[in-house]
Length: 227
Image 1 (cartoon, helix red, strand yellow):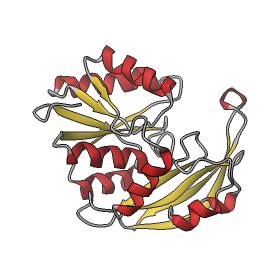
Image 2 (cartoon, helix red, strand yellow; image 1 turned 45 degrees about the horizontal axis):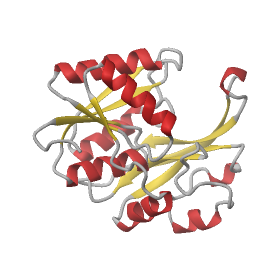
Image 3 (tube, one colour; image 1 turned 180 degrees about the vertical axis):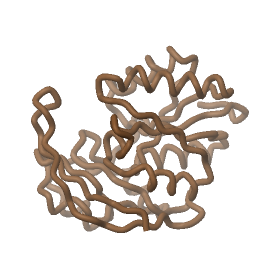
Image 4 (cartoon, rainbow, N blue to C red; image 1 turned 30 degrees about the vertical axis):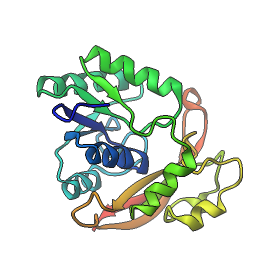
């Protein structure tokens, strides 16, 4: 539990889990002071979800929060993230909010890097039933688009769809409703935390083939443009 007098950052992917974690933290009275997002080496896309920084900035503007970007390869990711956490510590923040649900290895890593920066990791969704979190997200009125799917779990035509009850009903039984195992990622564009919807346009769907060291997996990304 974060003391209400303490400032916190949110590790922000732009997706549904980090959004729900932000919502829960704010509802409990936590003072969120910034969002932190990793971009790829070229600074053109969010590191995991593939969303361009202009749309992530539009999200932050609609949420009424400053957004700090950092660019990193996967090899540099931990080092650059710790630097971003230390910068937040220098600005007076003492907590970092994450949207992870129940993967212990993720929590262990988050607690490790936060400790190196003098911060405490907070996971508002931790150990909650995955489907219950999805239902809560939708019941609150949040709206999201599926912007990335892992081709090992889902075909291309799941990419670019609304994240809604119809999408959930069409998921194969072995695919988690939260996509917590990396099956898909989302971009949240409206909901109770937003002062207004984030305008965007869909472009093409692009395949990406990861190198052998990252699993030789095909991913499909819904390209988005600022409207």
